[in-house]
Each structure stands twice: as C-alpha cells, then as structure tokens.
View 1 (spheres, rainbow, N blue to C red):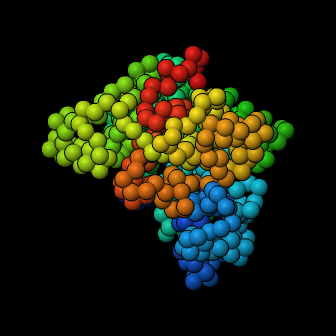
View 2 (cartoon, rainbow, N blue to C red):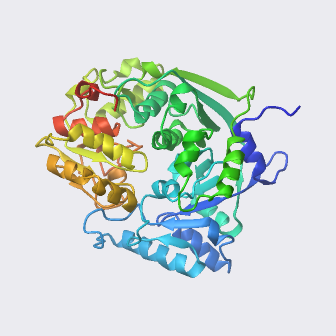
View 3 (cartoon, rainbow, N blue to C red):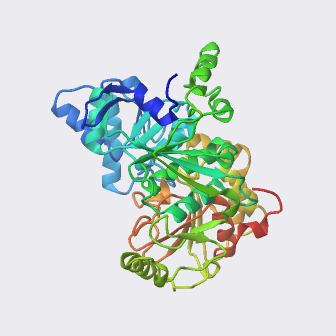
Length: 471
C-alpha cells in the first residue's frame, strides 16, 4: 500500500526533473506568466546569450502594473512607457503571446490566467510577481519568482526550488453573514502572523474553504504570500471543474472529462500527514480592517487600534509604535473613528466580477461621502465588459465612484493612481506596507463590501449593519 500523500507532494513529485541530496530540486514549469515590470532584464539576458524561449506556447504575457486606468493611451511616466514598449518588442522577437494594452484579453495577470482557462489543477505556475499564489485556488502550485529566475524559466522551462514543507490551514464551520473570503484570510494572518507560513506551501482545508466560490478561493490563496508562505492552494473539486469548463484554453469534450478525473485524483489522500497544521473557526471571523503597516496588523472593525504595550516582545512593541506613528493613529482609537480620503476597489485580490457585484449591492442608491475619492478598477477588460453589461458601472457612477479601465491601478505606486502623502485609503488590495500606494500614503486593507460602505460613510463601519441578507 502506497503512503498517503498531500496534493502538494503529488504535484511536486510529478514535476521533478532532477533531484539530488542536499540541493534544490529542478522542477518542470507548466505555465509561465509574464508582465512588463520583471521581464525586460530576463529577455535581455536571453538575447545576450543567444538563447530562445524554450516553450513559447507555455508562456503568456500581459501589461498590467504600469497601465493607465484613465486616458489609457496617455502614458506620462517614461519608465512605464519604456517597460510596456519593451515587453511588446520582446514578445514579438521571441514569439510569446501578448495581451497588450489594446488587446481584448488585457488585464491583471492573475485575473486573466484563470479567466482564459490557462490555470488548471496540477500545474506548476510561475510569474515574476509575488501574488502568483492566486492560481493555487485551482489546485496548482503557483509562486512568484525573481528576474533571474524569469530568465531561467524562459530559457529552460524549469526552475531550481528547495523542496517545501507542507502546512494545513484548516477552517472549520461557516463564515457568518457579511463576512467574506478577504476577511477570512486577513483574520488568519492576524491570528498567526506574517511569518507563520515561512518555508511552507499552505493547503487550505475545512468546511468553510469548501463553501467558497472560485473567486473567493482566489482571494484566500492570493494573500498566502502575506503569511510568509511560498504558495497556497486548495484541492480541486466540483466547484473548480465547473469554473474551468468551457474556458477558452480548457480541455474540450472527452478531453475535459479525462482531465477532471486526473484533477480529482490530485486531492490530498485521507491520512496524509502535513509538516504542520493550524486551525481557525470561521464563526469567530468578523469583518476585518488593517490598522498598521503589514497585513498581520489587523483587527475586527468592532475593535480598537492596539497599544504598544500589547506587544509580547520589545521588538513587537517597537513595531506597533512605529506603525502607529506612520499611520498617524492613536493607541486605543476605535477603528470606526478612522476617517478616510480614498477608497480603492480593485487589484488581483478583489477585482473580479463577483467582487464588483457585491460592492455594487452595497452602494446602490447611496452617495459617496464628500470627503472621499473613490475608484473602481476592474481586473480585466472582460470583467469590465461583463460588469457594464449588467449595469454595474452605472450603479457605481451614480453613487459617485470613478469607473476605470483594467489594470493594477492603486494597488501599488507604479502608475498614475497614487495616494498623496499623508492621506488615507481603504483598499481591497493585498499589501499595506509603508509607501505601497505612494510616498507616505496610509493603506487599510478591507473587503470590497467594507470598502464600498466606507466610501459612503467616509470612515470604517461594520458592513453587517447595512445587509439583511448574506453578501
């Protein structure tokens, strides 16, 4: 009888090209996603060494980080313009398919991969972007890589990686009314810290995880990197298969049925052992708001900002004090008293159609607070078109939101959508580091629903006060 295995071990072992005691493993890569920021030096390395892209058909590129979300073809920043032009030239030269700024499939790389059916269970997926873990929602091992590694994958379709440890994050029970997948992953990171996943690939299990939609699973896996993990994934099931069915790059007909049987077999075997396990009860999770400068500095909306004295070590006390100073918050201040200037709904964490629908349900018939500059940025052109077909754009615009074109936008300060120094933003993105949204900008991470009602109220409030039905 064979020893029970986790999905992580099954995928890893299937992709081993070379293994040697005491050294990293050489893994075969099934899908390499590319964008304009981390690829220029990698392509130049190929050119200097007279190399080709080993498997261009397994490589897919798009433009997202630098793309303007208003006046789309007016690119003011010369570095951004150069990176986008260079990606187009490189893809033409090396035969890589590209969804450029004018292409109907353009969008955030971690939105369009699943959307186009490029992301499948059992794949190894890499990209020069830390939030590649998003694709793990499908039962894939997906992780971000550096520029030199991008070049290695382009040249060889392989990558050297240390064999991972396995971590089971089990979520028991069901999420309550008004509590979202974003709240869940923020609560997990707040409870266990931004380093608890270091050295591990996480598998998320439990009843609450199984109840999530694919879009919600992508949100959870997207932020695995914020827990310090190398990647995060969820074993595929019927929800996964139905999402993939009919997608452009998905198998068709009998090939799809055959693929489903292979995908189903990937699920972690009963009795398989993980290197570590942590558990959380879904019913203890409330709507979350980050108050500090990493995603673990997070509390329920009903709570107060921590005091430095709540830190368990000297370093933790100092971290809290520094975060309070940067965020211009008072220790013990209620989260609901925090006033905002900006609200951003978008990013690879929360810019899919279901995210926009839920936010629109909150703001329908209401008006954005006079103090708030509010943006909604769809994750792809396809999401934008689908939202407009449903009239969601009119819901947002009638409420006073700006309705933008697809791109990474205000998630990070690499385009025109930047928070001015000292101003505060409720953001559905994944990072609240110092300067992430602009020099001296102050970022609070929340769910789309929490961001939507914050835009209306001008401050943080418990979205559950505004919903009679589960959102």
